[in-house]
Length: 252
Image (cartoon, rainbow, N blue to C red):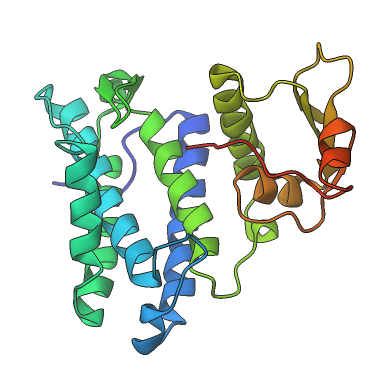
């Protein structure tokens, strides 16, 4: 008989799964509030409509499900054949009828959830490979999905905001983003301070840094390139832009 509960007993993984499932439910609510006509409207991402966001989230669930199948069987099953294939898939999905697009989201989310639920305890530690070529344990797929559904629920531009995202998700997002900057070396002379948490990121060796600060949700919104409301900047970078907040370095 197929199990009706998660096979893993790891409390941290179960908590992460719950966070991802809540994010999926949040995205579903914001999507379902939109009329079919409103799906044609612009999202917060340049060049993408709400249709593109929905297609991306649907196909992302299928791609991550392929990684879980890889972890379960040991048979390599890449997320996508290439980034070009992924992009073409999203563009195609955006042309689907509203009902087909909604079914894509619903069915792919259920499929991924079942794959997670039925993955044996030991298989969660099997290595899979992301579209960027990183080898990670299957446990990482939970965060990969959680990040997508929470952030892109905001990108639907239907009333969701970064302050609706749980603080643990925001904190990990900020660590991911600033970590990517550091890897590329694009955080030189930049310090990010979260005023409602004891969190500081960036170039601690700089003698004259540009310091961007604000509450966690506002800082993540800025760092993710979605706006700068609620953050302030001080230092050379701010002065160079007549006191305004400079744009965040590229993340993805």
